[in-house]
Length: 436
Image 1 (cartoon, rainbow, N blue to C red):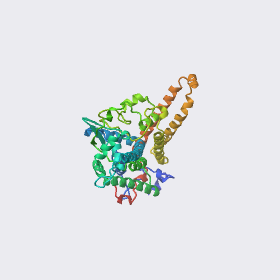
Image 2 (tube, rainbow, N blue to C red; image 1 turned 120 degrees about the vertical axis):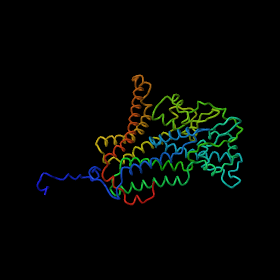
Image 3 (tube, one colour; image 1 turned 30 degrees about the vertical axis):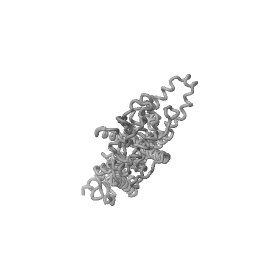
Image 4 (cartoon, one colour; image 1 turned 90 degrees about the vertical axis):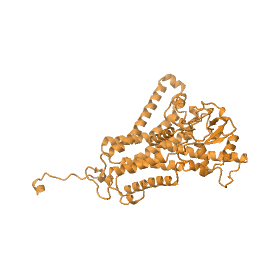
């Protein structure tokens, strides 16, 4: 009766796109609903698996304390959260380096008439051994001096001393803090998340931004995990191997320039290399000539590169890999291009951030390729401030890149205050699949 007595009363207009209805208009309820806590839990579980469990750090160093090991892992954790493509690229080059090291050591063992099979019948040299050596699992002891030796520069005495240890693959894996069950749990959680996300798309149920970035993380997580499959997890202490070689006395401690990741970083964020090398001595190249190298390089893999760093000797493979990985990570965020947002401004910010992440690395690469043509001597005489202008543009672009990365982290959490109503609907059968 009230409706008839008040002709001005009318229903709210129905939106053309049902996905645009926000959770404040219609709330899902019943068994096929999910709460914000459930969304947060499933997404954060995937992110935790990709960073804390999937990331395999190198050995922290000789006689490292618990706090030092935790600090090193937290550092890698932070990098994996903010820049998972960098860690995925690092994992790729470590896998590649372990294969190279495996072939080199196997060849040298044959040349030195060292048997590749232990008396027990087990192999004396496997890909797991190669990963273990590459990550700093072996230290040599000469008299009272204990030191790491660059695996790519092992002398014959180092090779003999290692095989005299008769280290089995089981002994190496015993150093690992992970097992097959842990790997299976991580894979199970990731596969569950992918399956229910695909099912939501098939049932026309909205995905949240947080789930979208988790899918981007998942793509790199799977690649990371495959690359590090043979690498022991979170080894705390290396093996000490007696060796008569005093090779640690040779070399220069200033030779820190052969790490491809540092070169790739300098490519994106140009800095005076000598200044940078003093602040990241433990993050890359091989500081030879140090009697006791307590801190093992965080980002080290076996590679044969130039002994000195110049802009022209930039590691092409590492740079191209970082460009491809960074652009791919940005492009994966574009899957949420048409998602409903609480405000128009947030949608524009998300789209702009996706474009920055996708095209900044490619643009920087193109600028690097054409910069020699722009910096001809005659042109620099005509425009003396061109170099300063180029540096300013690069730094401004780097700032925009960092802001875009932060925006893509913050916006998904801001969206939780006003979700599309179908985001609260759960896939009916997904809750019955095993997951964390």
